[in-house]
Length: 219
Image (cartoon, rainbow, N blue to C red; front, side):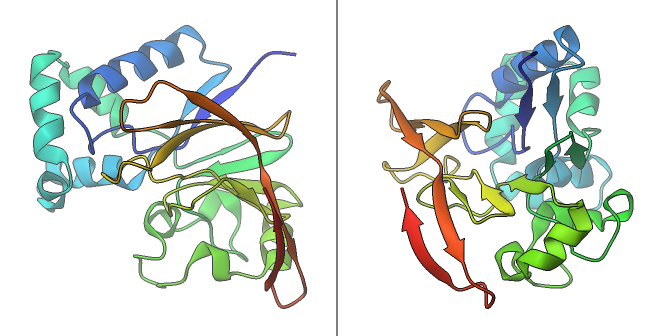
């Protein structure tokens, strides 16, 4: 089969090289349009609101550093338009991919964007982890949801949700960036402190009972 790459958003801010990341991912997506899918995250949403004159929140959450990087790399307006027009959701035969989560009971083609990008810092104020598994399963037709936005210490799968965010956007030296191989249940992770070592882990499994309480984690 053909390999597929899905980038879950937040490709900008939180570092000095936003411009290089944008250039690389845009080129990769244009080169392999059928197999590379780059989604929008809440940081791209903040950039869009800044461009539209609705909010300057982006400037205070890594946007200033990102703008300097855009200038250094001579990022064209067309590239920034590409950044702010990324899809919110992507779905294949096995998974649904989204930045922060989705709201059960609402069709995937009519999901509230604010929730998809920002939960729990959104209108409902509910964490994706707090929604019942069965409700999510009914909404996706049984497909697992691959998401990020809320950092964890390890990549986990609770039966319907797979969280891939290891907090690479934060400054603590022990934060990690993860590449998750869903086909082989494998995580390739690297520290964000400059250490080039790549560590290989298995996706952690959570056994979840009817009350959604975590009973066991296997790392």
